[in-house]
Length: 74
Image (cartoon, rainbow, N blue to C red; front, side, top):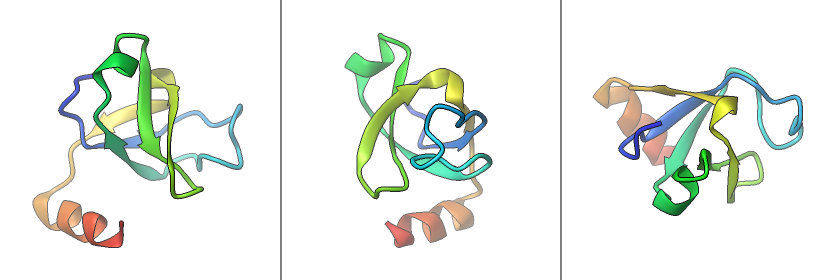
């Protein structure tokens, strides 16, 4: 997953059902060290950022209006 990715959608949450919601959009926190290990840092349901396997997410690009609205929530 490229490091410029700002948002991802959860496509697998079986190991973390309390922390990740299937189909939900999450904000990515850039972490190059984690990316070298196929991990991605996202702000999960706890409101904190944690590392998860990249395989649990698909990168998405939001329209600017949607991105602005999403960022206003965090």
